[in-house]
Structure formats: structure tokens, C-alpha cells
Image (tube, rainbow, N blue to C red):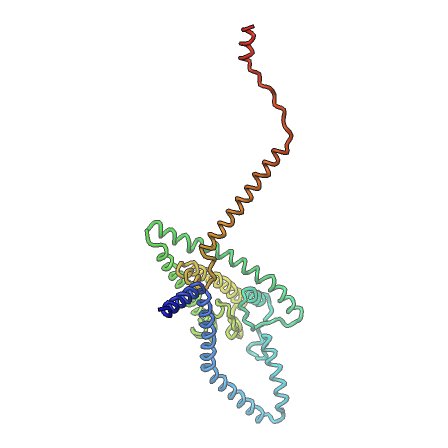
Length: 344
């Protein structure tokens, strides 16, 4: 009997301990899930891309061997030096190919596009500063510009979301009588579909027409990589040979990136305001102290306040005692004086 009671007490204590540390257990589960998700991504990418990398390496080795066999006057060391210089220039956005020599990476519109990718943290990496002064200025420019951009985007999103999300949801809830959380969910889904259509599918169709070497999937891939601020840099528009209206095209891409990032932030903020997501996020937060602790704190504050008030009243009484006596003026009873004079 005692063993059963001890087991029940121990189990109840374990249950209480788990209830008290429930956010910590949820957070640990979240961390483990994230690590497993990273491992899952690494396994998939490795299994899918490694065969293509191996095939490309073999093709390049075969091409190099064939080139050396056809040009016996050039040694392998000379070819290695030449290819090294070409690859280094390519990493800085400069190509030695004839079909890419007409595009300059640092004219005004290209520089404006580069500045927008830096401040929005997209960073394609296809163009990088060449000089030490440019690298130094890029550091200083980013230190000031990135927080400034986040502040501007936050202010814009807060103003836009009032007109696009909060007011329509409240209007439908008050005038049509639908539950507010249902209206918010439907509104978020509709806004998400509109944003995906306007900033992913339609631009992808436009890029697939303007860029000769891009199909629709590659164009959609560029839109997603850009607006998610991943910025891999494997696809960059406006870099083709003899691109028509290249300056205007670069300016349009810059506007598209900035407007698309703002739209993405509006959609994310709209979804974050859903009550269901707020409840889900609270599962992983550290809870505040319990009501008993709060009551103890309130009682302690009340005792402290009462002791302070008692001290204040005692000080006031001591001040009254220490104050000098004030001579009171005698009160003359005119009615009694008159009666005395009459008796006399």
C-alpha cells in the first residue's frame, strides 16, 4: 500500500514538473526538429546535386585535356594560370567573353541596383567592390543603411497593414457579423494568394519573356530567391548581351525588389497577427510567474506601501509636535457681554 502511494506521489510530482517546464520541453522539441530539418535538407541537396557536379567536373576535365592536346604549344601550368585569372575576374563580375563585354557593372543604374541589394540584404554576389575604398565604403554604407532600411520598412508595413488588413477585417466583422478570427484567416489567405500572383507568377512570366535564356521555372526561382532575401546570384536579370533598355530595365528590377520585399513583410505581419499563430508561438515562450507568485508580490507591495504610509503619518505627527505653539486669539462672546452690561 505504501509503495503504491509512493509511486502515485512520484508520478504526480513528475507530471507537475513537466507542466511547469512545458515551454522548455516544447523549445527543446523545436530545436531538435530544426536540426533534423537542416540534416534533411543537406541529405536531399547532396543526393540531388552531387551527381550533376561530378558530371560537370568530368566534362571540364575532358574539355581541358582536349584543349591541351590540340594546343601542344601551351603547357598545363600556363593554362591553369590563365583559367585562375579568368575565374577570379568572373568572381568580381567581370567576364572575358565577347558576348558579355558590352555590359558595365558600375554604371549608375547598376550601382543603384547593387545598393538596393546590399541594403535589402539580398546580395546576389555577381558584382562586388573591386577597390579597397569601395570595400571600406560598402562596410560603412551597410552599417548605417541596413538598420535604416529595416526602420523604413517597419514604418511602411505598419501603415500599410492598417489599411489593408486591420480595417477591412474589423469592417467585415462589425457590419457583416462574421467571427473576427474567421475573417482574419480568410483575409490572410486571400492576401497571400494575391501577393504570390502579383509578385511571383506575373513577374516570372515577364522575366521568362525578357530573358532569353530563362524559362518560367527559372524566372519563378529568381523571384522567390530574391524576395526571400536568399540571393544566391546564379540568376541575375539584365546581364545578357546587348540587353535592350538595360538602364530602364535595371531601374524597374530595383523597384520590383523593394516593392516585393515590402509586400512580403505585409503578408508575414498579417499572418503573425492571427490568433492561432499567436497561441502556437506562446507554446515556446517562457511563461511568466504564476498567479500565486504574483499575489505574493502584490501582498508584499501592499505591506511595503502600508509601512511607508505609516512612516509618513508618524513623520507628520512628529512635525506637528515639533512645531511652535500658535497663540490663539480670544473669542469674544458679544451676546454674553451685552447681557452682563444689562444686568449692571
